[in-house]
Length: 158
View 1 (tube, rainbow, N blue to C red):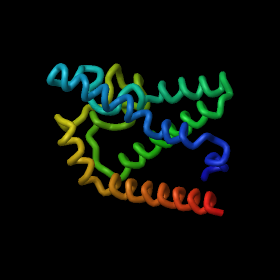
View 2: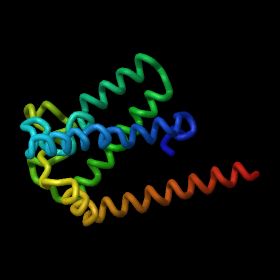
View 3: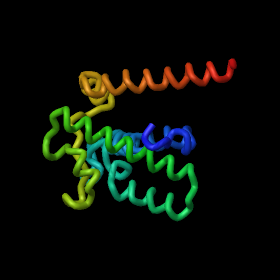
């Protein structure tokens, strides 16, 4: 892994960081959608607060201040998540109002986050399942996890 980060950072915290933007933003969006029946003017999609550069910079500042490996791992995971979202946007089409850059550079484009062009969790899942970049990423991620599991199992049996 990049610069030996996997060996130096606690894996469970790195995994948490990789998932954290979606663990925060998706329930936030769907909670607002479910309770109000429509998106909020600020939280208008599933990429908002935790997909922002402000959030990543706050985690980085916290990691520097505390010097705790767990916080460095969470920051590295969030940075990886954002990089993969940017990669997804580079290979998939998106509209100007749904760009990941609106979230990452918040509030440079105004006090709003990217808009979702789906109206339910099921529609979101369907559109995601049709995205070749997402499917390829899931297959690659699954292969990496399977390899790590096999290595760990082999090391434990030795």
